Amino acid sequence: MKKIIAALFTSVALVFSTPTLAVDVSQLSVGVSGNFGVFVADGKEENYTHTGTLETTSEKHGAAFSEGYASLFVEVAVNDQVSIGLDYVPDAIETPQNVNSGEGTDDTTDIKVKAEFEELTTLYVLAKSDMGVYGKFGISTMNIDVTSENAGTYPDPGNTDGFMIGLGYEYGAGEGVAVRAELAYHEFDDVRAQNGQTDKNEITVSNMQGGTARVSLVKSF
Image (cartoon, rainbow, N blue to C red; front, top):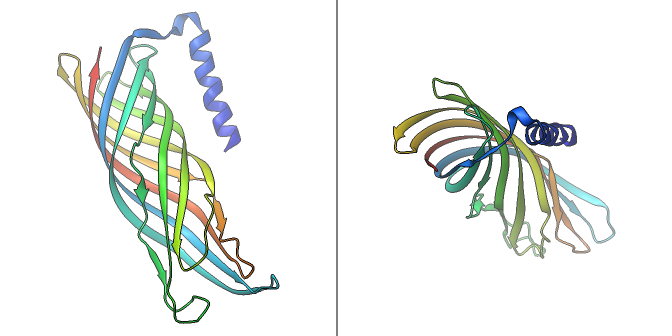
């Protein structure tokens, strides 16, 4: 992941520093997108005794959920074909609540856990052909907030980083307005959280990836 991030920032720096590819700051675009995503990940829960001995391990592979959400973006044109943009999701993307029946300390209480993906932000480069077909590559970061019931308090695991690649089509409607349709693939680094109890529960989420479809309305100035 670090190599991907370094490569992208090197490319952006090269664009800004090369006179023949100077950024045309007069070509600014803003937009709003409606997104529908399907996300999948592997989950593992490890339960420890009060002495720190691993007692049980539960794993779930390929757990998936879908969610619709809106995002906002701004782009600056490098030239007629290439733009650099920043996309931001203002609302949280919520996973369904996972319920482990009867796994509380009294063997009858249900443990409930869910996560929210907050402030999903993507820095990207968009390259567009004369026909309106475009490709997109970006790096993403988001904050993960875990909430639970009857399992102690899970501290915020913090940020996780990832990347996205997309393919889309832009239709120019005139007067600086365009409509885009896009499909994209996303992948994120693993995260881990534990509830801080003596007989702790530790949750690891790995292989986070997903696909999104979006329709965007763009205005260029």
